[in-house]
Each structure stands twice: as structure tokens, then as C-alpha cells.
Image (tube, rainbow, N blue to C red):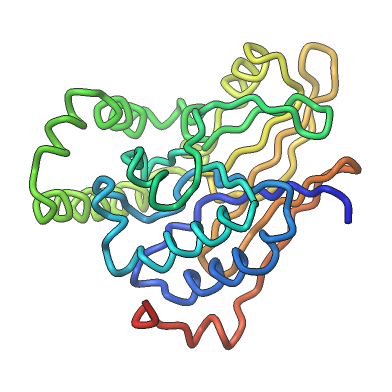
Length: 255
């Protein structure tokens, strides 16, 4: 069987969407077991209050599924997203996954490829970029993590409501990546190929970068179905994973 590397992002897993959690667990038990590696490029979880979350009921099956996969020999690399950027060593220890810097440059079957969550090139969304700067700061994170679990949970829930209301009023184009920002980061990392998520706009973009052909693949989200990019030495294919009756019937009480 040829080597294959899988890429996913924007699953936003949480207790209110059990069918998607079931689909993801099936994916870990089947497709991912045959992969050379699995990369999760941000927003694996809908929220993450700190590594105490590994013990939360809604996340325990996911952590267990990841641990079973990594224990079977498939390496899993996880990048922070804009929802779960507080994942740290506790998450790595519990899941067996390895946290990945953003951006990360890897050799993908002989081709240098840049991996990103995809929010940093969204420079036209000034409101989001200012918020990102705030919550990614060491001072904010230290103050947040010093609060009780209950306090952090409420703060995160408030942030989610604010985000929903803000997103509903924005021009969708503002929330997409800025092409010049994309070209700048690709140029600085000396790559002609990029894979990212965040924007929930799955598509392959072909363009010229400094006179050479360049490719940018945007991963799909896991809201109404799954989305996985399969890459091997022959190329890449973006695939959809449909929900099944088994997934729809999955309940978190199965913990």
C-alpha cells in the first residue's frame, strides 16, 4: 500500500454535535490507521479552557480515540486553531499527539509544503486580528488559566456568542485570507505549496508566485460532513466523509 498522509481541520468537536464526534472516531479507527501520518491543522475542538479539558466528559472519547491511534503507530500532529490554542503538554501526554508550530514547513513526499491553521493571513479582518493578538499574549493566558474551571468555561461561552454575532454581520470576503499575505508567508518560507484551514472554504487555488506555479489547498470543515485531504507521492485529493446512521445515532454517554 502506498504511503499516504492525511490532513484535516476545523472539526469544532463538542458535546452538542455528537454525530460529528462519531464520524471522527470512525475516521480514527479506520482511515487514519492506514496513513503514514495525520495532521490536524487547528480547531480540533470547539473550545479548550486549558488542559483540564482532557477530563471533560464530552472530550474523553476523543482523547481516547487519539491515544488509540497514536499507540497503534500512526503519528498525529496537531496545530493550534483559534478555538483551541490553549492545548499544551497535558493534551500531548493524554492523547499521544504532538503539537505543531504555526506555520510549519514539512517535506511532503519530496515537496516542501507550508502548513498553517489559516487565520494569520486574514489580515483584512482587523477586529479578529486584534482579538487574536490579545488572547495569544502571555499575560492574558496566564490570567485566564489562573481562574477556576467554571470561570474559564463561562468566559469561553461568552466569547463564542460574541464571535457568532460578529461573524453574522461581517462581509464574508473580509474573513477570508488576503492573497498578498499568503504570498508573503510562502515566500518567506521558500515554498510553492501551502495547506491550511480556518476559512471553511474548501478549494484548491492555483497561482503564480515569483514566476513559478504555486498551489494552496484550503481544507473543509466538519459541520454537515467530514473533509479530509489525502496526499501521496502522486498528488493530493480533497474528499468528503458523509455522515452515516451509525454516526447520527452516536451519543456521548458511550464514554
